Image 1 (cartoon, rainbow, N blue to C red):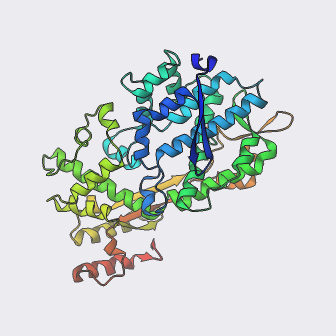
Image 2: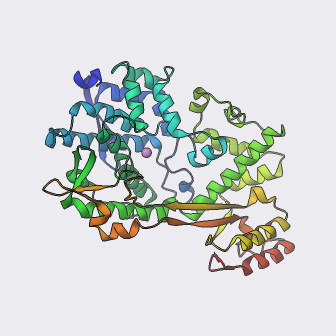
Image 3: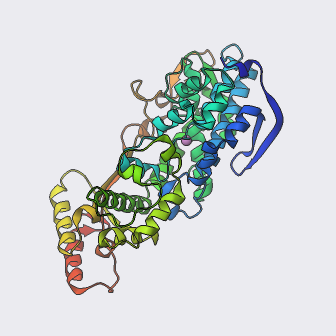
Length: 439
Ligand code: NI
């Protein structure tokens, strides 16, 4: 255990005003130092929801505020464990849980989802590197709690920490991370779907030998959380326009990378070369944030390469590729026909069309996958959530999501402001589409 949990280094309580949890309470000097570290401050410059901000303009919140929120929920839960379940919870575990909660997303980069795909980075691996690398401020601060304390915090993130209660608090189907992002994303997007009864959940959550459970009496609050999660995925995270911005970003970064590798990229924006090169250090990675990427896209708008400058302007001015939904089974042939029409209009296919699939299992009750949500009866016997809740049972039976074909907007627009030959192709294109679905 950390020295610090034995000898807490208290400071005057500090509070951060937060729109979701009202106040975030910090009364430990090391936690405050972690928040002040340059690696943690960098999270202020990375938006939590990436391209969702182009659909829900309120969604400008950062990974900094989410990370503080996960810390605060972990603090509330572990304080409660110490108070009511001292026989089942070792309060010396609180500090490692708080550090892991605060740092769980510290390896995220700008527009992570797309960036990772193109440049083969991995935010979870980088989170652990930031914690373990002696050159970071985060590592240095954690070491004050014990020589092996950084390794303990990293192992919570890696899910290899020996105490399953601590691991499940940070990473399970009902963890502090998900609880915070559902509430926070709902608040900032302005939708009502993500809300659930957090106060009730905090009253029924409890530790047991194999991890975290919920008193049976709180079943409907837990059920409501699973339904909220399902609705947030369907309405916010999988929104077709946000995905269109993601696809456009994906295609423009791919074009820039292809040009770089061919020695033909005429504009080299700051900080990105090590990633085009696939030769980056942790120091290079920590220089990235949303501003770096947006600036790069602004510069690419000026490129002499028409494909790159067109895609960059589409992203910069929020004119993303547009999409139609199709069912995956017997549509290969028709999707190929549609792509062919786009190509005939003069678009290089690989940069101006893409199939995007989104799917989510709202709740996984299998014991093989993520740990299932467990309810505890008054006699201490255990019940898996989907066997108690018919609503959760229905949601957990299959993947929810869809597949969409993304193409240049003019193929789906009604504007007459389009060259005649493209209009003819568009007519042929639209013939295969009915009510936004490919038929
Ligand atoms: Ni998170």
